[in-house]
Length: 77
Length: 411
Image (cartoon, rainbow over all chains, first blue to last red):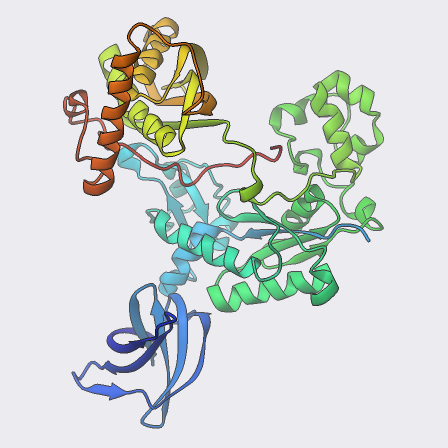
């Protein structure tokens, strides 16, 4: 399990809620997040780190996107 | 219904946070140690594997390496630990608002009222334990009991990642056979005094008479008897309801020993700047200045003196501190650590006897307040007393916060 730091485009609501919309992957392409399945605080025990964990659906693949302080990373096998 | 108190103690806190961020270290012995170049080189925390090698908190790095040559030594990352401490407290705050921190990694929670909605103390303890594990990746030991002392004993009883419930019915079986030193406020000196009178366990303390204990240990004897019998009624006090601050102090272990008065004056000035700035931040003045000195043989003394009028001026505090220092230290031994503390605090606006040079003092107060503003805007090193530019081998940064500090049980 690796930790891939990514650039994220997100929506900041008036209430201060952050919703990630898309991210830039290693190949330089921007991938839209099709759906946020779940959002919760979680530790990334395998990749290392802790933050708000978004369980997301990207092109029918489930990924875990973490916001650890102000840095975003994806758990990747 | 009796009280339901939880004591939550994060296991190997610093080391666990480090291992969480470096999963590759999970199966290696890891210790978080102070920086040896700054002579803070002791083990601050170790993980479970390092513990199995006999490494203890407080071991000097070379001692630890002798016990375990392949020990991974990490530098501490205090901002990260403080962040996790806050996150853990956020979890606790979902169960009760009566939370009393006892250091960075321990808290007491009074969940008496919450049990009516959320279930028993045991249930809440397990829920907290599991949440901290999944949400923060840390393990916690929780003690559940009807008073703070037994709750703390419970969290120490089984480690790591465990819940221990000590009730009025079972405390004699669980607590009493434990060694006396496991009880809060039984240090090594007290333990020696007790064991010389054949008092070895907490049960022995409980069965002794309070008068006898008082004769041996003074008023603490009575307190220990109350603790051992489960009669402690100390409330869980959130920091908001804390008594007024009793003192503001800063101390430092230096990168090299101090060998002359000039060195000492330098360090005292640096510490006094910090103490004075923190006093001003809290709108307080002090009547007493205290100096703490630890020599190269780790022998320490504390001396204090009163001021004529209360002050929050760095120059007055440092003058007094240096005066005390010169009176009580002759440099037979060199100095390893030094501390300055302001005591007998009063509100900065309180009345006091004016002097002939009060106007001068008022001007100096205004001046130091302006220095605070400059430091707030441009950083702590933006304005420094010239003396702090004279020694390149001693630290000159003025610490502003004493973020990690031990907390007293009695308030």
